[in-house]
Length: 605
Image (cartoon, rainbow, N blue to C red; front, side, top):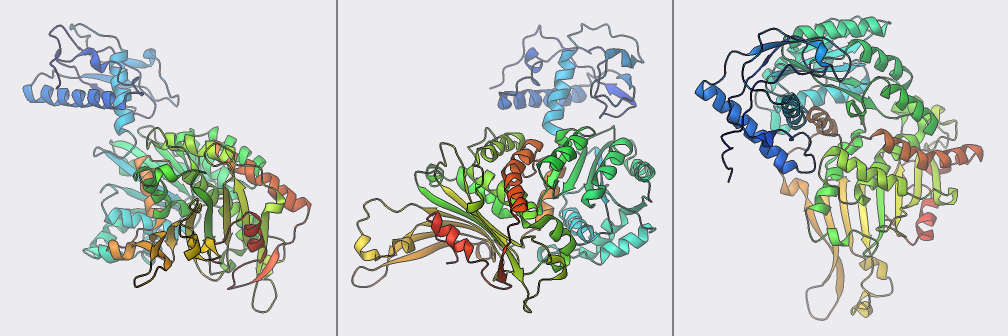
């Protein structure tokens, strides 16, 4: 029960305070509080170790403000004029008071600043009712923007996850009108099966809020133009902005520097989405990171990998940490091996230039595969806060043992005419398999086998956890000579259809005693009668909400490159020739020898 504050507790108007440059640079009302609050509000911002207490304090403050308005206690507000500044902090001398000083008793200035800090941290990450949101897609006429980004934004708009006053901006070097861009986007917009009600009206409303900016060949001028158009949409509201950089790697730095200098709002938050790959190796990634951090804060950067937006990835932590039956088993004591498999049926003809330059290791393994392993193997985080989760992920990445070239298999597919495609006249692999080990107390000695490739027999995205054999199994004689066939498995599958499968041994019905390995299955299509959102929808919504746990932080980026750069250097120095495999097949035979070497039977054996 919340006790009333002591009668002596007084909170009155504080002196003018310094505000961050992210706040509006115009006259701001400073409310004066009636003397009914307790000093328990003072240290809310500092009590990060007690989030429930802090939340209670914020709740008290909100109740207090409601009572002030209800009982008519609030006098005329004083006005503060805040000067424009690019610094994160502003001195008291930069704030001028435009009303006579209050005659009420005054507490320390840090009371109001701590309250502001608490409210900002509690409510400042997402888009509030009194704020605007502008989303700019840089490289708006590219294939990624047209086929993935704009459709995902429309799906979020239809579902009500974007504010009604949202502004969608397409930035490109083409001389297009707003209507031209709308026609380009409209050709790729569709409504999901469960989104057909008022689909046409919603689509028209979304397109009406879409605008084109011709950036020309000078990004500084283009970004200033973008800023002016955004300000017309935002008006006097708190302004929040998201910039999706759908641009080639060679243009990334020029675009990001111009954006930072000319298009960031000072009346809200700015968030920048960067597409993979994040560098070519450890050195180039470090230079890119340092350049970005010279213009942005780490919390503003969202390095996106659409494969991490799958429900499969979120289910890794949900299944483990919300089910008592699994968490005690999540260690070397019970788990024999873990397999992470991502295979594609199609080739890479549509992305030949990109793929021949970066290859499957830099494109898939560096981000998606290693992030999946980090989420799977991490220790329980302090909370579901993004930074807490990323703190645990980076510990896993730093614990991964240095890769040996003998534990790596490279492959390259050949077409039906036994001739490589024009863009595959190099040693760029289209298949990669490896055995990783995590040298910590939980996973010591457990092989994590990864296999990813294109042009394979089927599209498969899954994680398979194979458990150890039952010690002294009473039914060994009934199992037969191949005990591996009765290994318990937990399978998290995204493709070919979303499912969670648990392989167990049971008795076959009838007379006699015969064992059979069966799967207890949860098929999403049977359980949930909904169409699965695209991964871009998931990740874009996370950016809007300020949830960054599925996006790589700079130290995670560095740790991942420290794993792969040495093996990439060895492959280059030794001119390792990938093993050829037939398109539509199972991949290089060497992958099966790799599994046998580490005592692992691949799932598709």
